[in-house]
Image 1 (cartoon, one colour):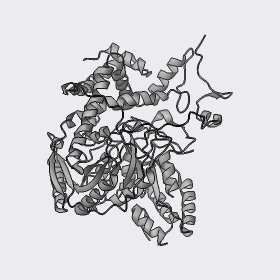
Image 2 (cartoon, chains in turn red, brown; image 1 turned 45 degrees about the horizontal axis):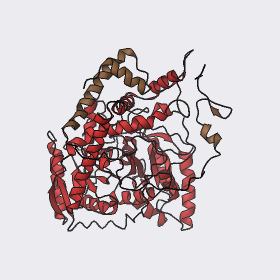
Image 3 (tube, helix red, strand yellow; image 1 turned 90 degrees about the horizontal axis):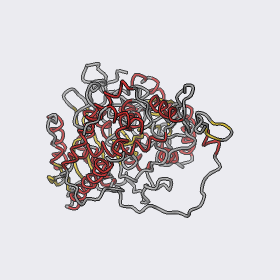
Length: 495
Length: 95
Protein backbone atom coordinates (compact mmCIF):
# COMPACT_ATOMS: atom_id res chain seq x y z
CA UNK A 1 0.00 0.00 0.00
CA UNK A 2 1.19 3.55 -0.68
CA UNK A 3 0.71 6.82 1.18
CA UNK A 4 0.00 4.96 4.40
CA UNK A 5 0.29 8.18 6.42
CA UNK A 6 -2.77 9.50 4.59
CA UNK A 7 -5.02 6.84 6.07
CA UNK A 8 -7.43 7.53 8.89
CA UNK A 9 -7.60 5.40 12.03
CA UNK A 10 -10.49 3.22 10.86
CA UNK A 11 -8.97 2.49 7.44
CA UNK A 12 -5.55 1.77 8.89
CA UNK A 13 -7.02 -0.45 11.59
CA UNK A 14 -8.92 -2.46 8.99
CA UNK A 15 -5.83 -2.71 6.76
CA UNK A 16 -3.74 -3.92 9.72
CA UNK A 17 -6.28 -6.55 10.66
CA UNK A 18 -6.53 -7.72 7.06
CA UNK A 19 -2.69 -8.01 7.14
CA UNK A 20 -2.45 -5.66 4.17
CA UNK A 21 0.16 -3.62 5.97
CA UNK A 22 2.02 -3.55 9.26
CA UNK A 23 2.31 -1.04 12.06
CA UNK A 24 5.99 -0.77 11.20
CA UNK A 25 5.15 0.30 7.65
CA UNK A 26 2.51 2.76 8.85
CA UNK A 27 4.88 4.18 11.44
CA UNK A 28 7.73 4.55 8.96
CA UNK A 29 5.42 6.31 6.50
CA UNK A 30 4.47 8.82 9.22
CA UNK A 31 8.07 9.28 10.37
CA UNK A 32 9.07 10.06 6.77
CA UNK A 33 6.20 12.53 6.43
CA UNK A 34 7.26 14.21 9.67
CA UNK A 35 10.86 14.44 8.47
CA UNK A 36 9.67 16.20 5.34
CA UNK A 37 7.41 18.66 7.18
CA UNK A 38 9.81 20.72 9.27
CA UNK A 39 8.28 23.85 7.72
CA UNK A 40 5.02 23.18 9.56
CA UNK A 41 6.79 23.04 12.94
CA UNK A 42 4.07 20.68 14.18
CA UNK A 43 6.18 17.98 15.87
CA UNK A 44 8.51 19.55 18.41
CA UNK A 45 9.87 16.45 20.16
CA UNK A 46 10.47 13.38 18.02
CA UNK A 47 10.30 9.87 19.44
CA UNK A 48 11.00 7.59 16.45
CA UNK A 49 12.69 4.92 18.55
CA UNK A 50 9.78 4.64 20.94
CA UNK A 51 7.41 4.62 17.95
CA UNK A 52 9.19 1.75 16.23
CA UNK A 53 9.40 -0.20 19.47
CA UNK A 54 5.65 0.25 20.06
CA UNK A 55 5.00 -0.65 16.40
CA UNK A 56 6.94 -3.90 16.79
CA UNK A 57 4.91 -4.79 19.87
CA UNK A 58 1.71 -3.95 18.00
CA UNK A 59 2.70 -6.10 15.05
CA UNK A 60 3.29 -9.00 17.42
CA UNK A 61 -0.14 -8.54 18.94
CA UNK A 62 -1.75 -8.30 15.52
CA UNK A 63 -0.03 -11.53 14.55
CA UNK A 64 -1.47 -13.21 17.64
CA UNK A 65 -4.92 -11.78 16.83
CA UNK A 66 -4.79 -9.98 20.18
CA UNK A 67 -5.23 -6.46 18.83
CA UNK A 68 -6.95 -3.80 20.96
CA UNK A 69 -8.82 -0.84 19.45
CA UNK A 70 -5.87 1.39 18.49
CA UNK A 71 -3.36 -1.39 17.92
CA UNK A 72 -0.47 -0.23 15.75
CA UNK A 73 -1.97 3.17 14.88
CA UNK A 74 0.62 5.99 14.89
CA UNK A 75 -0.52 9.21 16.54
CA UNK A 76 0.91 12.46 17.84
CA UNK A 77 0.56 13.66 21.43
CA UNK A 78 0.08 17.30 22.36
CA UNK A 79 2.98 18.64 24.43
CA UNK A 80 0.55 19.30 27.32
CA UNK A 81 0.41 15.58 28.16
CA UNK A 82 3.11 14.30 30.49
CA UNK A 83 4.78 11.36 28.77
CA UNK A 84 7.24 9.29 30.75
CA UNK A 85 10.89 10.14 30.02
CA UNK A 86 9.86 12.20 26.99
CA UNK A 87 10.06 16.03 27.10
CA UNK A 88 6.71 17.53 28.11
CA UNK A 89 6.96 21.30 28.19
CA UNK A 90 3.43 22.58 27.59
CA UNK A 91 5.05 24.82 24.98
CA UNK A 92 6.78 26.78 27.73
CA UNK A 93 10.34 27.73 28.52
CA UNK A 94 9.67 27.20 32.20
CA UNK A 95 9.41 23.44 31.67
CA UNK A 96 12.58 23.22 29.58
CA UNK A 97 14.35 19.95 30.29
CA UNK A 98 11.43 18.48 32.27
CA UNK A 99 11.22 14.70 31.88
CA UNK A 100 8.08 13.35 33.57
CA UNK A 101 8.61 10.26 35.67
CA UNK A 102 5.05 9.15 35.00
CA UNK A 103 2.62 8.79 32.12
CA UNK A 104 -0.63 10.78 31.84
CA UNK A 105 -3.72 8.61 32.15
CA UNK A 106 -4.98 9.52 28.68
CA UNK A 107 -1.70 8.70 26.92
CA UNK A 108 -1.41 5.51 29.00
CA UNK A 109 -4.96 4.55 27.96
CA UNK A 110 -3.97 5.08 24.33
CA UNK A 111 -0.82 2.99 24.72
CA UNK A 112 -2.84 0.28 26.46
CA UNK A 113 -5.11 0.36 23.41
CA UNK A 114 -2.02 -0.28 21.26
CA UNK A 115 -1.40 3.23 19.89
CA UNK A 116 2.07 4.22 18.68
CA UNK A 117 3.49 7.63 19.73
CA UNK A 118 5.41 9.48 17.01
CA UNK A 119 6.30 12.50 19.15
CA UNK A 120 5.03 15.59 20.89
CA UNK A 121 3.09 18.35 19.17
CA UNK A 122 3.42 22.11 19.20
CA UNK A 123 0.89 24.22 21.11
CA UNK A 124 0.34 27.64 22.62
CA UNK A 125 2.22 28.07 25.88
CA UNK A 126 0.21 26.39 28.65
CA UNK A 127 -2.65 26.14 26.12
CA UNK A 128 -3.16 29.91 26.37
CA UNK A 129 -3.76 31.18 22.87
CA UNK A 130 -5.85 30.77 19.74
CA UNK A 131 -3.14 30.84 17.08
CA UNK A 132 -0.17 28.78 18.34
CA UNK A 133 1.84 32.00 18.34
CA UNK A 134 2.62 31.94 22.09
CA UNK A 135 4.67 28.72 21.88
CA UNK A 136 8.30 28.61 23.00
CA UNK A 137 8.94 26.43 19.94
CA UNK A 138 7.73 29.14 17.54
CA UNK A 139 4.59 29.10 15.42
CA UNK A 140 3.05 25.94 14.08
CA UNK A 141 1.96 26.56 10.49
CA UNK A 142 -1.33 25.65 8.84
CA UNK A 143 -0.87 23.35 5.80
CA UNK A 144 -3.69 25.30 4.13
CA UNK A 145 -3.02 28.51 2.20
CA UNK A 146 -5.25 31.16 0.65
CA UNK A 147 -5.18 29.99 -2.96
CA UNK A 148 -1.74 30.68 -4.39
CA UNK A 149 -0.87 33.24 -1.70
CA UNK A 150 2.26 32.00 0.10
CA UNK A 151 1.39 33.86 3.31
CA UNK A 152 1.61 31.54 6.31
CA UNK A 153 -1.64 30.97 8.16
CA UNK A 154 -2.26 29.93 11.75
CA UNK A 155 -3.48 26.38 12.35
CA UNK A 156 -5.41 27.81 15.32
CA UNK A 157 -4.71 27.15 18.93
CA UNK A 158 -3.99 26.05 21.39
CA UNK A 159 -3.79 22.55 19.81
CA UNK A 160 -2.24 24.04 16.65
CA UNK A 161 0.50 21.44 16.22
CA UNK A 162 -2.04 18.63 16.57
CA UNK A 163 -4.30 20.20 13.95
CA UNK A 164 -1.49 20.90 11.47
CA UNK A 165 -0.07 17.39 11.89
CA UNK A 166 -3.38 15.64 11.28
CA UNK A 167 -4.37 17.89 8.38
CA UNK A 168 -0.95 17.38 6.72
CA UNK A 169 -1.08 13.59 7.23
CA UNK A 170 1.99 13.50 9.47
CA UNK A 171 0.09 11.15 11.76
CA UNK A 172 -3.22 9.32 11.64
CA UNK A 173 -4.68 11.32 14.53
CA UNK A 174 -3.57 13.34 17.52
CA UNK A 175 -4.57 14.22 21.05
CA UNK A 176 -5.71 17.73 21.85
CA UNK A 177 -7.01 19.54 24.89
CA UNK A 178 -9.77 22.11 25.06
CA UNK A 179 -10.26 24.75 27.76
CA UNK A 180 -12.14 27.36 25.71
CA UNK A 181 -12.09 25.91 22.19
CA UNK A 182 -8.54 24.63 21.81
CA UNK A 183 -9.59 21.42 20.03
CA UNK A 184 -12.55 22.70 18.02
CA UNK A 185 -11.14 26.00 16.72
CA UNK A 186 -7.89 24.48 15.31
CA UNK A 187 -9.89 21.55 13.90
CA UNK A 188 -12.11 24.01 12.04
CA UNK A 189 -9.10 26.03 10.81
CA UNK A 190 -7.47 22.94 9.30
CA UNK A 191 -10.42 20.98 7.93
CA UNK A 192 -10.35 18.12 10.43
CA UNK A 193 -12.66 16.79 13.15
CA UNK A 194 -12.19 17.46 16.86
CA UNK A 195 -14.35 16.59 19.84
CA UNK A 196 -14.23 17.94 23.38
CA UNK A 197 -16.10 15.43 25.52
CA UNK A 198 -18.21 16.13 28.60
CA UNK A 199 -16.19 17.48 31.51
CA UNK A 200 -15.09 14.42 33.48
CA UNK A 201 -15.12 11.97 30.55
CA UNK A 202 -11.32 11.99 30.15
CA UNK A 203 -9.02 11.95 33.13
CA UNK A 204 -7.00 15.12 33.57
CA UNK A 205 -4.27 13.29 35.52
CA UNK A 206 -0.87 13.98 34.02
CA UNK A 207 -2.13 16.75 31.73
CA UNK A 208 -0.44 20.05 32.59
CA UNK A 209 -3.26 22.05 34.19
CA UNK A 210 -4.44 25.38 32.78
CA UNK A 211 -7.97 25.91 34.16
CA UNK A 212 -8.97 22.75 35.96
CA UNK A 213 -12.74 23.28 35.91
CA UNK A 214 -12.68 23.71 32.12
CA UNK A 215 -9.83 21.54 30.76
CA UNK A 216 -10.74 18.37 28.85
CA UNK A 217 -8.73 16.18 26.51
CA UNK A 218 -10.12 14.89 23.23
CA UNK A 219 -9.13 13.44 19.86
CA UNK A 220 -8.33 15.36 16.66
CA UNK A 221 -8.92 13.14 13.67
CA UNK A 222 -9.56 12.87 9.94
CA UNK A 223 -13.19 11.73 10.35
CA UNK A 224 -16.04 11.42 12.82
CA UNK A 225 -15.59 7.64 12.88
CA UNK A 226 -11.96 8.11 13.86
CA UNK A 227 -13.02 10.51 16.61
CA UNK A 228 -15.37 7.84 17.98
CA UNK A 229 -12.66 5.19 17.96
CA UNK A 230 -10.03 7.36 19.61
CA UNK A 231 -12.30 9.01 22.17
CA UNK A 232 -13.37 5.60 23.40
CA UNK A 233 -9.73 4.64 23.88
CA UNK A 234 -8.90 7.88 25.71
CA UNK A 235 -11.69 8.12 28.24
CA UNK A 236 -12.85 6.18 31.27
CA UNK A 237 -12.89 6.54 35.03
CA UNK A 238 -9.60 7.26 36.76
CA UNK A 239 -9.27 7.22 40.56
CA UNK A 240 -6.34 9.63 40.20
CA UNK A 241 -8.65 12.42 38.98
CA UNK A 242 -11.41 13.14 41.48
CA UNK A 243 -13.47 14.89 38.78
CA UNK A 244 -13.26 11.92 36.43
CA UNK A 245 -16.71 10.38 35.98
CA UNK A 246 -17.32 6.85 37.17
CA UNK A 247 -19.51 5.99 34.21
CA UNK A 248 -19.32 3.18 31.70
CA UNK A 249 -17.79 4.17 28.37
CA UNK A 250 -20.21 3.43 25.52
CA UNK A 251 -19.17 1.85 22.23
CA UNK A 252 -19.06 5.16 20.35
CA UNK A 253 -18.26 3.65 16.97
CA UNK A 254 -21.16 1.21 17.14
CA UNK A 255 -23.47 4.16 17.83
CA UNK A 256 -22.59 5.87 14.52
CA UNK A 257 -25.85 5.26 12.70
CA UNK A 258 -26.01 8.76 11.25
CA UNK A 259 -29.76 8.53 11.70
CA UNK A 260 -31.05 11.92 12.84
CA UNK A 261 -34.67 11.42 11.86
CA UNK A 262 -36.88 12.97 14.51
CA UNK A 263 -33.93 14.51 16.37
CA UNK A 264 -34.43 18.08 17.46
CA UNK A 265 -31.53 20.32 16.48
CA UNK A 266 -31.50 23.73 18.15
CA UNK A 267 -30.30 26.87 16.35
CA UNK A 268 -29.41 29.53 18.92
CA UNK A 269 -30.21 33.04 17.76
CA UNK A 270 -27.53 34.57 19.99
CA UNK A 271 -24.80 32.94 17.87
CA UNK A 272 -25.67 35.26 14.99
CA UNK A 273 -23.00 37.82 15.81
CA UNK A 274 -22.74 41.37 14.53
CA UNK A 275 -20.12 41.61 11.82
CA UNK A 276 -20.01 37.83 11.26
CA UNK A 277 -18.67 37.16 7.75
CA UNK A 278 -21.35 36.25 5.24
CA UNK A 279 -19.51 33.03 4.45
CA UNK A 280 -19.93 31.82 8.02
CA UNK A 281 -23.64 32.60 7.92
CA UNK A 282 -23.95 30.73 4.61
CA UNK A 283 -22.03 27.77 6.01
CA UNK A 284 -24.38 27.67 8.98
CA UNK A 285 -27.51 27.88 6.81
CA UNK A 286 -26.14 25.09 4.59
CA UNK A 287 -25.57 22.94 7.69
CA UNK A 288 -29.10 23.60 8.89
CA UNK A 289 -30.45 22.53 5.49
CA UNK A 290 -28.32 19.35 5.56
CA UNK A 291 -29.64 18.32 8.96
CA UNK A 292 -33.22 19.11 7.92
CA UNK A 293 -32.81 17.07 4.74
CA UNK A 294 -31.46 14.20 6.82
CA UNK A 295 -34.72 14.18 8.74
CA UNK A 296 -33.94 16.28 11.80
CA UNK A 297 -36.38 18.81 13.15
CA UNK A 298 -34.83 22.30 13.23
CA UNK A 299 -35.89 24.39 16.22
CA UNK A 300 -35.03 28.04 16.89
CA UNK A 301 -33.76 28.39 20.45
CA UNK A 302 -32.41 31.06 22.75
CA UNK A 303 -29.33 30.89 24.98
CA UNK A 304 -29.72 34.36 26.49
CA UNK A 305 -26.44 34.59 28.41
CA UNK A 306 -24.19 33.69 25.46
CA UNK A 307 -22.80 37.22 25.24
CA UNK A 308 -21.39 36.95 28.75
CA UNK A 309 -19.57 33.67 28.23
CA UNK A 310 -16.27 35.15 27.04
CA UNK A 311 -16.03 37.79 29.78
CA UNK A 312 -16.88 35.12 32.40
CA UNK A 313 -14.27 32.82 30.88
CA UNK A 314 -11.64 35.57 31.03
CA UNK A 315 -12.17 35.78 34.78
CA UNK A 316 -12.49 32.09 35.61
CA UNK A 317 -9.74 30.70 33.37
CA UNK A 318 -7.03 33.20 34.43
CA UNK A 319 -8.06 32.83 38.09
CA UNK A 320 -7.60 29.07 37.93
CA UNK A 321 -4.43 29.48 35.88
CA UNK A 322 -2.88 31.84 38.41
CA UNK A 323 -3.41 29.18 41.04
CA UNK A 324 -2.33 26.22 38.89
CA UNK A 325 0.79 27.95 37.59
CA UNK A 326 1.95 28.90 41.07
CA UNK A 327 3.75 25.55 41.06
CA UNK A 328 6.33 26.82 38.56
CA UNK A 329 8.66 28.32 41.09
CA UNK A 330 12.07 27.06 40.00
CA UNK A 331 12.27 24.57 42.87
CA UNK A 332 10.87 21.22 41.81
CA UNK A 333 11.20 21.07 38.04
CA UNK A 334 12.04 23.05 34.95
CA UNK A 335 13.82 26.35 34.63
CA UNK A 336 15.44 28.28 37.48
CA UNK A 337 16.82 31.77 36.81
CA UNK A 338 20.48 32.46 37.41
CA UNK A 339 20.60 34.45 40.61
CA UNK A 340 22.72 37.44 41.58
CA UNK A 341 24.72 37.74 44.73
CA UNK A 342 22.37 38.37 47.65
CA UNK A 343 19.22 37.22 45.85
CA UNK A 344 16.81 35.43 48.16
CA UNK A 345 13.95 33.09 47.49
CA UNK A 346 11.54 35.85 46.40
CA UNK A 347 13.99 37.06 43.75
CA UNK A 348 14.39 33.45 42.65
CA UNK A 349 10.62 33.09 42.15
CA UNK A 350 10.23 36.45 40.44
CA UNK A 351 13.16 36.10 38.06
CA UNK A 352 12.39 32.45 37.26
CA UNK A 353 8.78 33.22 36.38
CA UNK A 354 9.66 36.37 34.40
CA UNK A 355 12.16 34.39 32.31
CA UNK A 356 10.15 31.19 32.09
CA UNK A 357 6.68 32.48 31.19
CA UNK A 358 5.97 34.25 27.90
CA UNK A 359 3.96 37.50 27.71
CA UNK A 360 0.48 35.97 27.28
CA UNK A 361 0.97 33.57 30.19
CA UNK A 362 2.29 36.37 32.40
CA UNK A 363 -0.68 38.52 31.43
CA UNK A 364 -3.19 35.83 32.33
CA UNK A 365 -1.50 34.85 35.57
CA UNK A 366 -1.54 38.49 36.64
CA UNK A 367 -5.17 39.04 35.58
CA UNK A 368 -6.06 35.91 37.56
CA UNK A 369 -4.12 37.18 40.55
CA UNK A 370 -5.94 40.49 40.35
CA UNK A 371 -9.47 39.05 40.14
CA UNK A 372 -8.75 36.79 43.10
CA UNK A 373 -7.11 39.48 45.22
CA UNK A 374 -8.66 40.88 48.38
CA UNK A 375 -11.40 43.37 47.57
CA UNK A 376 -12.01 42.12 44.03
CA UNK A 377 -12.85 38.46 44.61
CA UNK A 378 -16.59 39.11 44.89
CA UNK A 379 -16.80 41.73 42.18
CA UNK A 380 -15.00 39.62 39.58
CA UNK A 381 -14.50 35.99 40.49
CA UNK A 382 -17.74 35.28 42.33
CA UNK A 383 -19.77 37.25 39.81
CA UNK A 384 -18.21 35.28 36.95
CA UNK A 385 -19.04 32.00 38.70
CA UNK A 386 -22.66 33.14 39.08
CA UNK A 387 -22.82 34.03 35.38
CA UNK A 388 -21.38 30.59 34.66
CA UNK A 389 -24.31 29.06 36.55
CA UNK A 390 -26.68 31.05 34.31
CA UNK A 391 -24.87 29.96 31.14
CA UNK A 392 -25.18 26.33 32.14
CA UNK A 393 -28.86 26.87 32.97
CA UNK A 394 -29.44 28.28 29.45
CA UNK A 395 -28.39 24.90 28.06
CA UNK A 396 -30.33 22.91 30.67
CA UNK A 397 -33.46 24.83 29.73
CA UNK A 398 -33.21 24.03 26.02
CA UNK A 399 -32.37 20.39 26.68
CA UNK A 400 -35.42 20.24 28.96
CA UNK A 401 -37.49 21.46 25.99
CA UNK A 402 -36.41 18.30 24.17
CA UNK A 403 -33.50 19.65 22.12
CA UNK A 404 -31.04 16.83 21.31
CA UNK A 405 -28.15 18.88 20.01
CA UNK A 406 -27.29 22.43 19.01
CA UNK A 407 -25.77 23.48 15.69
CA UNK A 408 -23.52 26.55 15.51
CA UNK A 409 -20.52 27.79 13.55
CA UNK A 410 -17.24 26.54 15.08
CA UNK A 411 -15.32 29.79 14.56
CA UNK A 412 -16.18 33.36 13.57
CA UNK A 413 -13.77 33.25 10.58
CA UNK A 414 -11.45 31.05 8.56
CA UNK A 415 -7.79 30.72 9.58
CA UNK A 416 -6.04 34.09 9.72
CA UNK A 417 -2.44 34.92 8.87
CA UNK A 418 0.35 34.35 11.38
CA UNK A 419 1.31 37.75 12.76
CA UNK A 420 -1.92 39.39 11.54
CA UNK A 421 -3.17 39.81 15.09
CA UNK A 422 0.17 40.97 16.50
CA UNK A 423 -0.93 44.57 16.91
CA UNK A 424 -4.48 43.80 17.99
CA UNK A 425 -5.32 44.04 21.67
CA UNK A 426 -5.57 40.72 23.52
CA UNK A 427 -9.38 40.84 23.59
CA UNK A 428 -9.52 40.63 19.76
CA UNK A 429 -7.67 37.30 19.92
CA UNK A 430 -10.00 36.07 22.68
CA UNK A 431 -13.01 36.54 20.34
CA UNK A 432 -11.88 33.49 18.37
CA UNK A 433 -13.47 31.34 21.05
CA UNK A 434 -16.83 33.08 21.01
CA UNK A 435 -18.75 30.01 19.75
CA UNK A 436 -16.82 27.36 21.66
CA UNK A 437 -16.27 28.77 25.14
CA UNK A 438 -19.89 28.40 26.31
CA UNK A 439 -19.51 24.64 25.95
CA UNK A 440 -16.56 24.53 28.37
CA UNK A 441 -18.34 26.73 30.88
CA UNK A 442 -21.34 24.39 30.81
CA UNK A 443 -19.19 21.22 30.83
CA UNK A 444 -20.89 19.89 27.68
CA UNK A 445 -19.55 17.81 24.78
CA UNK A 446 -18.93 19.69 21.51
CA UNK A 447 -17.59 18.57 18.16
CA UNK A 448 -16.26 20.53 15.18
CA UNK A 449 -16.79 19.01 11.74
CA UNK A 450 -15.46 20.46 8.47
CA UNK A 451 -18.39 21.24 6.19
CA UNK A 452 -17.23 23.83 3.65
CA UNK A 453 -14.61 26.20 2.29
CA UNK A 454 -14.45 29.96 1.98
CA UNK A 455 -13.90 31.66 -1.37
CA UNK A 456 -10.14 31.49 -0.91
CA UNK A 457 -10.40 27.75 -0.46
CA UNK A 458 -9.84 27.64 3.31
CA UNK A 459 -11.75 25.07 5.35
CA UNK A 460 -14.64 26.08 7.59
CA UNK A 461 -16.32 24.02 10.27
CA UNK A 462 -19.58 23.73 12.13
CA UNK A 463 -20.00 22.77 15.76
CA UNK A 464 -22.56 20.43 17.28
CA UNK A 465 -23.13 20.66 21.03
CA UNK A 466 -24.63 17.70 22.85
CA UNK A 467 -26.26 16.81 26.15
CA UNK A 468 -23.91 15.88 28.99
CA UNK A 469 -22.56 12.30 28.69
CA UNK A 470 -24.31 11.78 25.36
CA UNK A 471 -21.22 11.80 23.18
CA UNK A 472 -22.50 8.68 21.41
CA UNK A 473 -25.59 10.52 20.18
CA UNK A 474 -23.54 13.64 19.40
CA UNK A 475 -21.03 11.67 17.33
CA UNK A 476 -23.86 10.02 15.41
CA UNK A 477 -25.38 13.42 14.58
CA UNK A 478 -21.92 14.68 13.58
CA UNK A 479 -21.58 11.62 11.37
CA UNK A 480 -24.83 12.59 9.60
CA UNK A 481 -23.50 16.13 9.10
CA UNK A 482 -20.19 14.78 7.79
CA UNK A 483 -21.95 12.47 5.34
CA UNK A 484 -24.17 15.28 4.07
CA UNK A 485 -21.34 17.82 3.76
CA UNK A 486 -19.00 15.40 1.98
CA UNK A 487 -15.93 17.50 2.83
CA UNK A 488 -12.93 15.77 1.22
CA UNK A 489 -10.62 18.68 0.32
CA UNK A 490 -6.98 18.53 1.39
CA UNK A 491 -4.32 21.20 1.49
CA UNK A 492 -2.00 21.21 -1.55
CA UNK A 493 1.42 20.11 -0.37
CA UNK A 494 3.89 23.05 -0.39
CA UNK A 495 6.07 22.08 2.61
CA UNK B 1 -12.16 50.55 37.54
CA UNK B 2 -8.84 51.79 36.24
CA UNK B 3 -5.52 50.20 37.03
CA UNK B 4 -2.54 52.48 37.51
CA UNK B 5 1.15 51.60 37.54
CA UNK B 6 1.29 51.07 41.27
CA UNK B 7 -1.61 48.57 41.13
CA UNK B 8 0.10 46.79 38.23
CA UNK B 9 3.29 46.62 40.31
CA UNK B 10 1.35 45.20 43.26
CA UNK B 11 -0.28 42.53 41.09
CA UNK B 12 3.08 41.56 39.59
CA UNK B 13 4.48 41.24 43.10
CA UNK B 14 1.56 39.09 44.24
CA UNK B 15 2.02 36.88 41.15
CA UNK B 16 5.77 36.65 41.83
CA UNK B 17 6.67 37.83 38.33
CA UNK B 18 9.44 40.38 37.97
CA UNK B 19 8.28 43.30 35.81
CA UNK B 20 10.73 46.10 35.04
CA UNK B 21 9.44 49.55 36.13
CA UNK B 22 9.44 50.84 32.56
CA UNK B 23 7.09 48.02 31.49
CA UNK B 24 4.44 48.80 34.11
CA UNK B 25 2.65 51.48 32.08
CA UNK B 26 1.97 49.21 29.12
CA UNK B 27 0.98 46.39 31.47
CA UNK B 28 -1.53 48.59 33.29
CA UNK B 29 -3.00 49.59 29.95
CA UNK B 30 -3.42 45.93 28.91
CA UNK B 31 -5.08 45.12 32.21
CA UNK B 32 -7.50 47.99 31.71
CA UNK B 33 -8.41 46.69 28.25
CA UNK B 34 -9.11 43.20 29.55
CA UNK B 35 -10.92 44.38 32.68
CA UNK B 36 -13.04 46.71 30.56
CA UNK B 37 -14.12 43.66 28.56
CA UNK B 38 -14.81 41.70 31.75
CA UNK B 39 -16.92 44.51 33.19
CA UNK B 40 -19.77 43.58 30.84
CA UNK B 41 -20.58 41.04 33.53
CA UNK B 42 -21.97 43.89 35.63
CA UNK B 43 -24.95 44.02 33.24
CA UNK B 44 -26.12 40.57 34.35
CA UNK B 45 -28.68 40.23 37.12
CA UNK B 46 -27.09 37.62 39.40
CA UNK B 47 -29.38 38.24 42.39
CA UNK B 48 -30.00 34.93 44.16
CA UNK B 49 -27.78 32.93 41.77
CA UNK B 50 -25.35 30.46 43.34
CA UNK B 51 -21.75 30.68 42.13
CA UNK B 52 -20.83 27.47 40.32
CA UNK B 53 -18.55 25.17 42.27
CA UNK B 54 -18.77 22.05 40.11
CA UNK B 55 -19.89 21.83 36.52
CA UNK B 56 -21.00 18.22 36.84
CA UNK B 57 -23.28 17.48 39.78
CA UNK B 58 -21.19 14.70 41.24
CA UNK B 59 -20.31 13.83 44.77
CA UNK B 60 -16.58 13.55 45.15
CA UNK B 61 -15.40 10.01 45.69
CA UNK B 62 -14.03 9.08 49.06
CA UNK B 63 -11.52 6.46 50.04
CA UNK B 64 -9.91 5.13 53.16
CA UNK B 65 -7.49 7.62 54.69
CA UNK B 66 -4.42 5.46 54.27
CA UNK B 67 -1.07 5.80 52.56
CA UNK B 68 -1.34 4.50 48.99
CA UNK B 69 1.83 5.81 47.44
CA UNK B 70 5.34 6.86 48.29
CA UNK B 71 8.97 5.73 48.38
CA UNK B 72 9.80 7.63 45.23
CA UNK B 73 12.34 10.15 46.46
CA UNK B 74 14.59 9.70 43.42
CA UNK B 75 11.74 10.25 40.99
CA UNK B 76 10.43 13.24 42.93
CA UNK B 77 13.84 14.93 42.93
CA UNK B 78 14.84 13.89 39.42
CA UNK B 79 13.73 17.12 37.72
CA UNK B 80 14.82 19.55 40.43
CA UNK B 81 17.12 22.37 39.24
CA UNK B 82 19.04 21.91 42.48
CA UNK B 83 18.66 18.86 44.73
CA UNK B 84 21.10 17.91 47.48
CA UNK B 85 21.20 15.08 49.98
CA UNK B 86 17.64 14.04 49.23
CA UNK B 87 16.18 17.53 49.45
CA UNK B 88 15.18 20.38 47.13
CA UNK B 89 17.75 23.16 47.53
CA UNK B 90 16.77 26.84 47.51
CA UNK B 91 18.54 30.10 48.40
CA UNK B 92 18.82 30.82 52.10
CA UNK B 93 15.41 31.75 53.57
CA UNK B 94 16.36 32.41 57.22
CA UNK B 95 19.34 34.33 58.49
